[in-house]
Length: 116
Length: 107
Image (cartoon, rainbow over all chains, first blue to last red; front, side, top):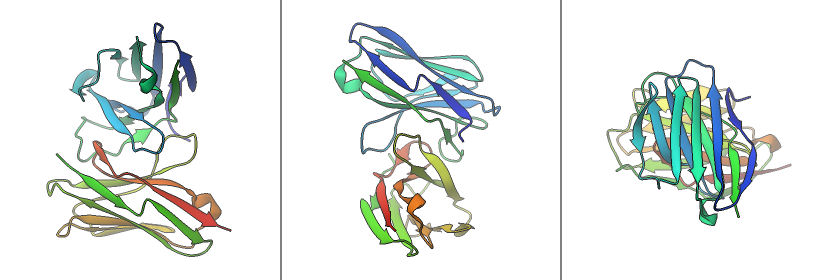
């Protein structure tokens, strides 16, 4: 079982709603990630936090707003989303700094988001 | 940037046979290559990884080989079982994933 916990597992929201996805890990990891995964596609990196600071934003639209309240928690705030934003949103974490070339990354089970 | 190509996109084998999935990468600076298994409705789970100072790594029925000169790495699953059926992704680091291979193990 994964040690990265994501809530909710499923979320349906309207295009005018504001909602949040939550992620928690208690492995002492200092890097946390958000990925987006469409059906039958690989995960696409959205954001990386290293020591609670945003270190990478892969040109993600501002309707997605990440937040890292502390080293164990990562949120993704959603506002004014479009139907094409419907996807599986994966949180992940890794030990140490967010060196993208050498860390073992552990994924959560994901949050299925449907925008109607 | 890095580009990872993965083949085949689908693979069907009989239970007990071996399965091989291959990936190539473009950036010679890449030095970490994980493999993930993703079952339906779940997040990707790391099954094995290899770093560039190692040519091969094994964990029970799963092995990964790396050829840095040719810039390719492969996942080998021996004695396949129906529960091995899933989508498998290779990756170079955390940023770049292969397109995935859907493995179906027929009982």
